[in-house]
Amino acid sequence: MASDKELSDFLVGVEKRAFKRTFFNVRDEEAALDIVQDSMMKLAENYGDKPSAELPMLFHRILSNTTLDWFRRKKTRNALFSNFGDFESNDTDDDFNLLENLASIDELEHSNSAENVFKSNEIVHEIEKEIENLPARQREAFLLRYWEELDVSETATAMGCTEGSVKTHCSRAVHALMIALRAKGIEP
View 1: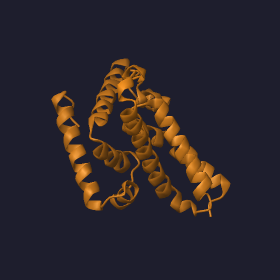
View 2: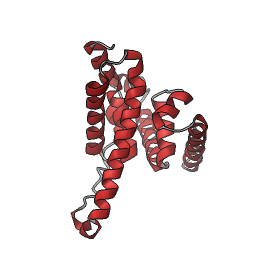
View 3: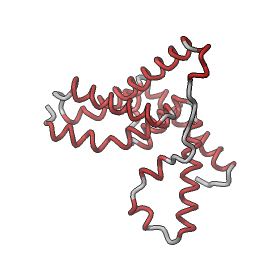
View 4: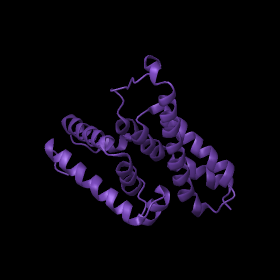
């Protein structure tokens, strides 16, 4: 059974990565924050009595399910109110750069010059845009494997699919990212 401190430490440690993963999926900052918060609440309320070793897998599964629920509600709402499109807001904050906001100052201090910092930020921004353009399942598999650093089995469990599907999604995502970045003159 996880202690309150272990649960709290886990949630603090996973918060930023969970937000980034969710933001890439839903492309809405406020919705991503709500989804992550709801997922954390569900974990604490329903699974706080589980061993601390099980918390990561439980949380990733809850986060995936909560994200899917958000998409279902959005699809239903859009179907119900398709004639009221003027009430929908598709505003996006183009100035918001998630990786810049999450980057630590220490990382930036290791750069040699302002020019290097600018180039690095531009490359990160391009990579971020290309990740956002991936199909949903490829994006989810890619983020779980390479951002969350889950192994194939853990990713399959979190996504509710087979290990073969995870490998396929990841392979396609990496291939698509490589092609897109090379087209922009960025060598991965």
